[in-house]
Image (cartoon, rainbow over all chains, first blue to last red):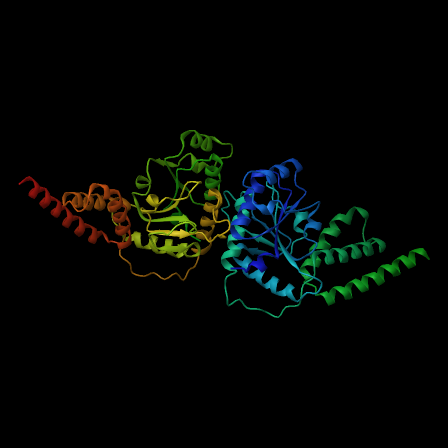
Length: 255
Length: 255
């Protein structure tokens, strides 16, 4: 069982939820399992209002955060896990099975405890009802957590997917003999984005590839940076290097 | 992971479900986790028709069994587990936590394999939306499985409760090193009811207590018989004894 202050560091992120009943069901599952923090990304406004004002809506809907993009939603998080089923895609990041989620979250909570600069958070991200998380959404995730469903009917209802994942966290994070490897403190998604921006500018300045390739390059870059598990010290060093390169490139262009 | 033929022996029983959306959600969770057998007890007819005819309703709704009472629903089952949260009641039967359900079900599947007289089944029973399983419903259950929810918001949505329980079965029944204690084969709920009827008649014939006490006595009797874990041989013996007693009592009354 996660402690209340550990649950308070886990954000549930719903990307573009459409159906107010599903939003309500997700919020109810959060209340059932004691997870208070909800963020919704680009919800459809009328349905979002309807979900918040529904009779019996859990209080956490009223205090939910709303962001325009997944990038903003997870910017302050040091670890981001996307959820889904694997039937129709080949993921580009490491895949964990849902029963492993508890130990992953405990490891990351521990890892980000040593981080300086305020409280750090972990995000568990759920995609829109129709198609789940897109490839672009997943570029902000360190891991894709697979919910093991039947290949004949793989697609879960959003509220049920949230319930199953939070039950798993409530269930398995209980293990008291959890090993605590000495891992370096984590960096936030926003810090990785800043580095990605800088590297991207550098690539453009360096005329690395045609402009048409830019979105694909950015996508690969986001994935790459999340695979690296950079420490804050690593990050500072890499940022410093790229700032220097970019300055140099600009310098050369001007001259 | 339970094998398909093991899942085929597990019946999901919904007692008096009201909301067609909840019925649909429960059926969808069953399809997601590969459990094909649904029984609904005394559903509200218009909503039951609506759930079955909904767009995208899983095929298992069309083949669902419908019974008038929980007694009929579980009559052929050798083990019946009720589900719920414990906040507002003091249960009268053994309580297991949901994470234990997988090993309990595997043990009971093994135990009932040696049983003669056709295939035996296990039931997982869910109460109505408003109040969950009643005390009378629970009298047909060997065990109450508790879903570990937050005391501040204990009551789960029906579809989400089904999803969480079936996920747990999919998850934990996987353990290959499950111990197989040599336990006696099981008897069905209907066989226990036959014995309860006989014992009740005997109590009445013996003027055991005032007529006003009869419902309470029957309730206690149902619970007692389910605690005993009678083998088929035990059952035959006890039935034989009570038939004899009843015949004797009638005999005395006539003379």
